[in-house]
Length: 95
Image (cartoon, rainbow, N blue to C red; front, side, top):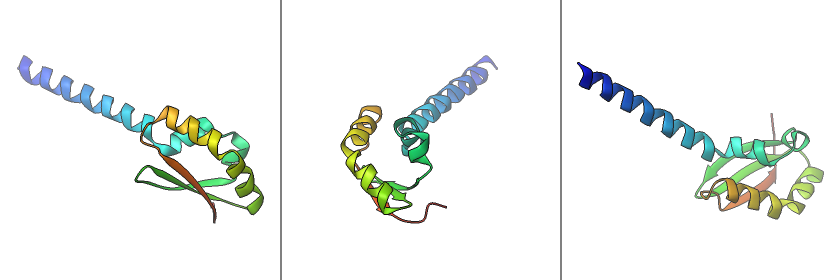
């Protein structure tokens, strides 16, 4: 009976470790760490594929502003997660 209890405990610990690792590498969570609240109000995460984070921006003004900061934002994202290789901003609906 103790063996089953130990197995369940180990499985639960493994699941918790995987959950922590996934949340650490989640591009949405990383964007919240890297960008300001004001910037977050003007973007929407679209997808993360092959190391590229794609983000919609609500206006050309914010697209320009974020593209000016792209190098800084990308460096911070890469520092947080090695899985991210690039970030791309595009004008789109953020609702």
